[in-house]
Image 1 (tube, helix red, strand yellow):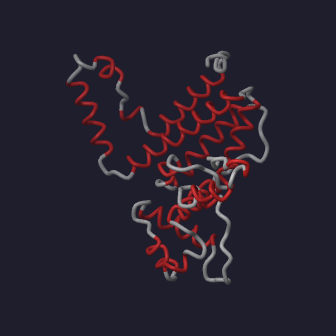
Image 2 (cartoon, helix red, strand yellow):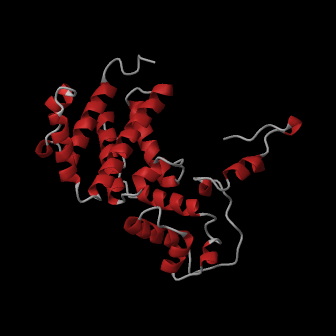
Image 3 (cartoon, helix red, strand yellow):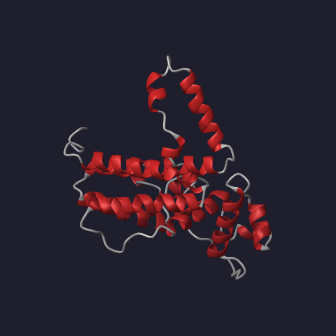
Length: 250
């Protein structure tokens, strides 16, 4: 987001910073505070502790007070290092992206690189069930998230994608992984997944006259586990992107 021009003075950079100051993602644009040293706290320790709490309790239960208690510090001392809870969430989310182990070098096949990106991203998002939904709610501007994006964009440019087709392909890939991982994470935290799916299956089959196609093709539990479902969808998506006319349709 850019600041509004002010006559002959041009763009005011302070205005843009004020707009972002308390928004998700602002931590990556905010200048660090000048403060006396506080060796007991650091961004690294705060981030690691926040990830631990988020893994255990989720986003809603995380607060600056709970984080400070876990760190053995006073809540006000956190504000010398992070300005808001959103700062903490941004740092924690970027720490999750740091766990994505991508190849150091790109392969000869862009599809193989994208598959490595998609399967790796899914793994780290499932390891931290809160991260998928959070990634959809804010700009991913941390250094680790940008490193991952750079890898995916480079692979896609090797495959011939450029301009709006490049951004659309990258968004499609990322949204598929985040959406799939978010759904799986939610369902895996429930104890009634199998019973619920069986009930849905029975309901559709009981109304076969209204939903004949669904009743005839609703996935069987033993044939459609989460892992198989993801990899099947990924192969279909990559096949679509690799089709000759993928970039010819605007």
